Each structure stands twice: as structure tokens, then as C-alpha cells.
Length: 197
Image (cartoon, rainbow, N blue to C red; front, side, top):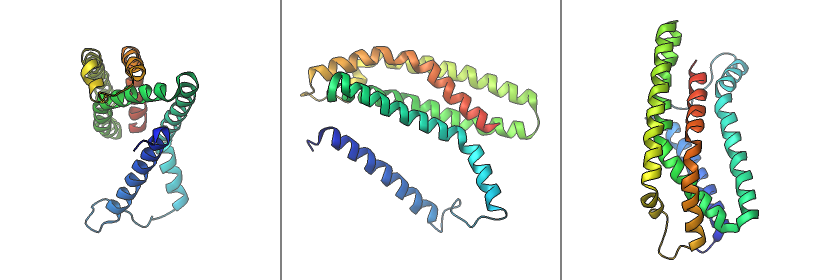
């Protein structure tokens, strides 16, 4: 649409609004097993419990938002729109590949929560050990795909008329990005297990 950075901002805003509207419509449906309902009992106690359970995810979202804002401001000042575009491409590829890790973490943590609710400490320790080993394996596979498939992954985002500066910066970014996979992965895992417990 030839809107440049403003177009990217509008696209992000529209995507978030559509997601919220979809959630509201879905959970308001009479056919939905999980939906909105009138709170029972002490509403302030319910709010406190929800807030305490959701605090780690809230802080993660705040940290990611601040990180994106700071990175975009710095990159815009250092390399202009091309630099921000290259960063966005690399960041999108990162999250595309790390999506399986988010799914894995979100699906195994209820098992930890259930074992903790049973007061079965041995099972909790065993599950956490298995999760750490599986996360390590997943990160190694994701890193290998990221490094070995770098050109293919970048080709998903590049058009024939892509500026050479964006192409070069994104290629360099793809070389550096895997360095943070282990810390990011274990950070995600730690937050999810903490919430599960």
C-alpha cells in the first residue's frame, strides 16, 4: 500500500483489534463451553487471585513491549526504516520457529500443575527434568533450522525488488539471532513452570 512505517503500525493495530473482537465474539457465544459469566462470591478476591496468577505473563508482555519499543527507536535512529524492516523480518522468523516452544511449554505446564496439586514432589521434579531436556533438544533443532535454513527462511520475506541494504542487514541478523535462543527459551519455560506451580 506504499504506507511505509505508518502502514506497519496500522497493520499491527488492526491485527490486535481483530484478535480482541474475535475473542469477544467467540467467548460470548451461547455454544461456547468456556465463556463469560457472572462472577460468584467475593469479586475482589477473584481479582487478586487472577492478578497474582497472571502477573508473570503480564510482566513478560510489558518487558517484550518495552524491548520492541526501545529496539525500534534505536534501530530507526541508527539505520532508518531499512534497519527496522530487517529487524522485523528476523524477529518474525524467530517467533515463527519459537512458536513450537511456546506451544510445548503451554501444553506440559498443566501436567506440572496437576502433579503439584497431588503433592507428588517426585513427579514434579521428574516432569521439570523432562521439560528441561526436551526444551534443550527443541532449542538445538530450532537453532539448526535457523542456521541451515537461513536463506530459505529469508526468501519467504524478500521480494525481487527488496532493497540490498535490508537484505544484507537481515542476513547478518540471522547469524546473530540464534545466540539468544537458549536464554529466551529457558526464560519462557521458567515463567510457565512458575505459573503452573
